[in-house]
Length: 219
Image: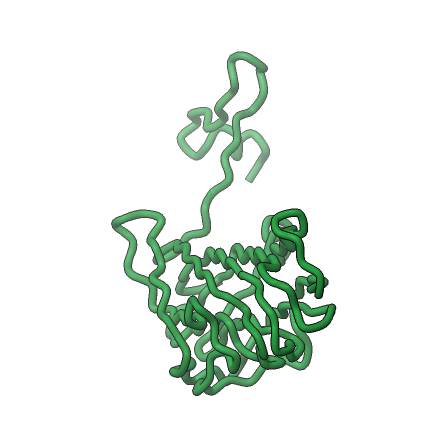
């Protein structure tokens, strides 16, 4: 197909829209063709004696559709003094053989459809209880990849001054989906967010999670 045909279209009518003020082509990004596009958020506390590798949030694809992750924002900040100053991180893992979500210390966030006419999502979503749980969420069946796909660090301090030290540590690992391949989850795959190191007898921080994703039949 020639350049002329691509501009004019098959019927010979111009398909090019020009901005009258700047005499420039007006273009629009086409959304991913999907069964539905969704957003969901979760908030929880990270508390005293928070276990290493304790799960705080998860999204599991039960199939048969594919799930395309388009956005994951983690916002984390300290809310109380810790037993000792410590370097911690929240790590995001892709999981396979993810046949069952967690059942203990969980709440179930509800995804919002970006358009009312879209089908409800089939994704299984779980977050640790809002008040926190030292063991995190448990009871699920999943296999984490050998290394995380994203991480956000925070230095948690013994001497805590509110609010001068309440600095937010921010992570958006999927901010580059327009130029690279997005994370695509097949049946029994998913992601999970976990705390990396064991915290002391005194600890306190808050985590806010925002997620966007699409369900598609093929990608």
